[in-house]
Image (cartoon, rainbow, N blue to C red; front, side, top):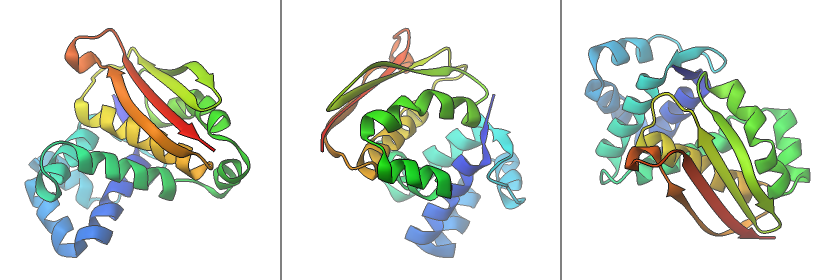
Length: 185
């Protein structure tokens, strides 16, 4: 299973901006030799990289720069939602509504992951519910990442987030992962 390089490069950029070159050195040192070697090679945003590199990078960054509760993963995902937006998508975020943006999430999924599918089950004014189905290797860090992306996407499209959370998760034995976000404009 693979993820687009932009998911990794945005996290590396976040670490460098928040914790400097020394923080990035510490993160690389914490990675497995295989992932450290891959990260030290140039990763292009449009190329596919192993999903397990993405997971390990998130978990190690959270352990080094957070408290181990994966809150740093959510911060990195929020940052990634912002810096990975090409100019065309920036226009959609500025002109679109949160409902419109989350409604496009299913199409974006296929561009960024080689596994699973993201569906919009319920989307109404002031709230959205995204379902992740058939994802090959669920991991709590990935779920926090999806949630962070969704929250920042709502904010970037003019919504004030009122509440959010993951109400079902395969890592807890559920059949799917379900992410809910409520907002006002």
